[in-house]
Image 1 (tube, rainbow, N blue to C red):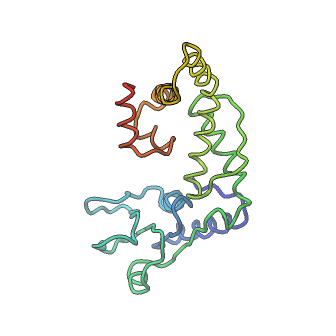
Image 2: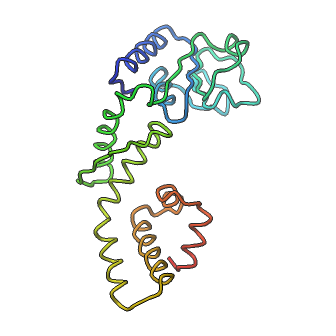
Image 3: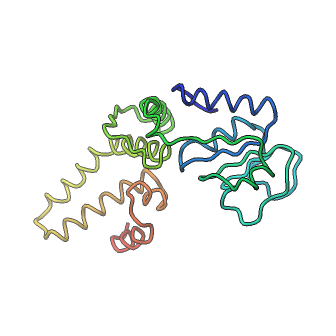
Length: 222
């Protein structure tokens, strides 16, 4: 599935449909999170992604621009990368290239994706809370926007419980700033642990180094 709301993305989708009908080898490039993989799968839905052995199926090769050893030519190849490839390499492997521009260059799509990802997140997480994204995070395009929505939705669901637990901690007795900070961290980590189960996901959502997080959680006996 490749979602297209703006005129710009509709044009991209039309080009992709033409490439699919004509069995063209396509190189799709652009910044991280612009939807390259979605577009590749839209063009070649039955493709094998990054095959380890020869196949008669169409193939999708990700990060083609960073490959050291280039693959053999295939009958149908769709590849993705973050930057254009050398002209000689392009002419050897591809018939067409498609650049997917960052969201900042077609901002009319931002609210559409916010609505789409919010509905998706509510369904997956089984959370019926309203959230408002005042400053969309499009640093990594769809990746960061989706992450922001899931994070806001999860925080909205857990905020009252976290604050209540923190309040109970602080009411027990007067503590030093350092002790109160440790109690807050322990409360936060426990709540995040219940929600995400994985230290990797906790570190990603809190934007904290995984090694630092592990040391903190171990020190707090979380």
